[in-house]
Image (cartoon, rainbow, N blue to C red; front, side):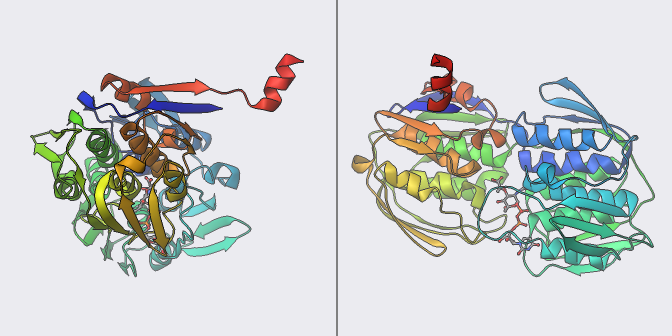
Amino acid sequence: MEKILITGGKPLYGSVEIDGMKNAALPIVFATLLVRGKCLIKNLPCVSDISRSLELIEDLGASVKRLDKHSVEIDSAGVRVRSVPSDLSRKMRASYYLIGAELGRFGRALVGYPGGCDFGVRPIDQHIKGFEKLGAKVNVEGGYIDAFAPNGLIGSNIFFDIVTVGGTINVMLAAVLADGITVIENAAREPHIVDLANFLNTCGADIKGAGTDTIKIKGVSELHGCCYTIIPDMIEAGTYMTAAAAAGGNVEICNIIPKHMESVTAKLEEMGVTVIENDDSIRIIRDPDTKIKSCNVKTLPYPGFPTDMQPQLGALMCQADGVSMINEGVWDNRFKYVDELKRMGAQIEVTGKTAVIKGNPDRMTSASVRAVDLRGGAAMVVAALAVNGTTDIDDIHLIERGYDNLVGKLTALGAQIRKITVVPPDQAFNVAN
Ligand code: EPU
């Protein structure tokens, strides 16, 4: 069992390089199943969700050559349609992209129900509605999603009832080789949707409008291999931005697209943090002796404030002078991390999808906490960097699903952080005996 120990209360200085975006890389890895020929994917983040996605497609018969830490060559020629057992699909949410990719390539998919962070109910009714509009018959039974298009998929108009990132991506994957034109209305506009469209178009697809709420996909008969570089991870970047704001100091966040950070930048500025934008980097400056101002935020689909930055901002709000309010506009239950912040002295009241945070840096202390999920774990890191004393964070495998080399990157910024292996008491007893 591994833990992270952070002795906080020390400002951060220096620069940090941001990796490729996990939530763009995941659909692109699954999209290679649709391609005839080899795909060279660069700037892949080295995180456990990506390793699992590569294992999943290897298991289906894809040849996956890891060229270096961030590059992989994928050849899906040998992929055959077969069921993906739920013990594999449950390991990650993005396994549901296998449904769109397999349906698109074979007209058939049998995939165990996906897993992922627990934010309350996580339905996939909109994905299913999209597949059905394209002509597939979909059954959900015994923990499996069984999708079958006996006459092949046929382009159609799909209007999503809610904005869904996964639903938009899944329908894009299914429609790219379908017969005719598919139009997705009320589509998600996240940068990772644009990145997937750019990847598919580089392989010969005909997708227009990605990044707007109307995406038009003209089905093509086949996709060819390509070389593609994943965009930088806006959530990893935002996490380091809030970490620098919470601890204070002067940190340059490099290899990013500042435009993607606008909603986070605006909130940090509102909280009195200096944010300087350059072409492909952002500098965060905060004098540790100045107070952070409170603010209110509502999370929304892009370009609104990202729900995946909500816990990290919540941790920063605990350091603010005054009362802040968070309204979670995407997920039903994304406040599990609040109980962990309370262990550190935070005063937070949660009612439904709203959290009221009485910021008071003097009350915040180090504690033993755990990562309740990926971004909840990132929030603990942000909180720990700001407080005096040593905080230990448990269940860090959840953080490692989405952050590569967190300890190394923060150490380079001057943080006192280390990873330790703890032998559980029962095993220690066995060793002793
Ligand atoms: N929803 C439905 N029906 C559907 C699909 C979604 O009601 O068929 C609802 C969800 O319950 C939620 C809302 O729509 O309330 C938005 O869900 P969305 O489909 O957009 O989320 P997702 O695709 O499952 C991705 C990211 C999440 C991120 C959300 C929102 C991946 C692998 N996951 O999830 O990322 O929170 O979009 O931006 O891309 C993370 O990286 O930590 C993470 C959880």
